[in-house]
Image (cartoon, rainbow over all chains, first blue to last red):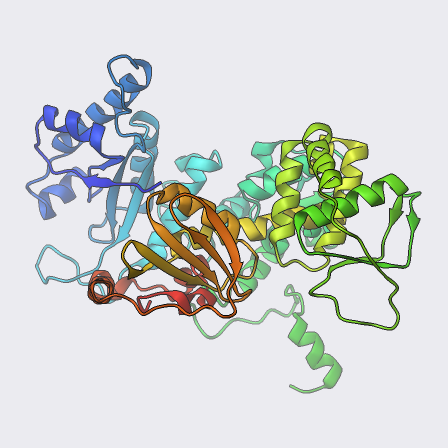
Length: 297
Length: 252
């Protein structure tokens, strides 16, 4: 149950890794900085090859220990290996960081990559001075990381050369969906599992629930709510039995984006003022409706 | 189940799972559905209700228990037992409907999530299991004597038994007491067998001196290891709701 992790020091011998791997559950070699130049600048004792070599060795040994059970009585690093990246200390873009993690998930079969927002403690000319650690950026990277591991997304889909960093206002999946609105709306009753996972607001649990439930009955919006599927974001991107949640002409980027931003307004720090639109695309909230009834502004 | 006879009676039982299974047996054999099922302790007298007390019959209960395993599936047994432990409203009547329907339909019942009572049973199971899982990590044992440990909890669901079984497997050689303060029951284990007793008149001895020292150390550790810049109260409360904090030693 308990995971005993050893953060491994660089340059230790292979025999040490071999015997350590039998004793501990998880090994972690921290890359810390996502490019060779940054490593030279801030962590000159670390080298790209010096980090990647032991990582490759560990992942190969894990693979061997799974097959060669006569030699390995106990599993070698049963909980897999992980690594950590520091975000915000160097000028790398989110795209570069995400590409690096994607590559490591594929080639080294890492269990997880941890992202850690940079907290400035020392003052040095090479170190940036940040007022606050970039926690929102860390959060966005974790969200994207989950999309890579469990939702079947590729790093190239989420970010590209035109948008190398994540949108601060919307989460990566919503952002992707708004850029690829031609793939939506998705019919809940016929879409396969991997397509369901691409709908913003529908995760692994909801998608599995939908798949089991629709074997017996066709689903509509009410039954989705009964199943416990959160429709806060999903309602803009799905149809149930061919019906859209709002009028059909509301399915456009402007309407969806404004309403998504409006529902997220409390969770994201943003400017206090906003430009009002004459053509009202915002739906009235519960409080607005009450205000209309009482006439109390 | 749609052509079953509805009777305007409230069934009372002794509050055990066996008692509920006896009701399932009786309802299924006579094809009747009661209006409500309430355990005897929780029942509040009401002049509108007709009540009927159903005696627990262990033979009938055993037959239903094995029948669920054989005719529905193992998961249905698991669902109904954990739903029974939860504090969900009308849990008994929902379990009754779920099981009776399950006998007619078979293992397919678990996929019929849009049926309200199936969903509520599965939801109740989720509630009690997730609370059990949380408390497995959150329980703080305190030494109150030679090889004797005590922990108090305030859970919403009656999960003291599965929780105790977990710690029996975890610490087979230690004697411990888990005290459910909301229900006033205690799980006792003496490294051989366990017992669940009523604890209204129970007095707990003070913690030992060694324990006192360790508690101080633990508090200090907790304070030292925290990183001020990365404090995220909202996230912390999502994993560990505030209602459980009163049983903690440290001050999160």
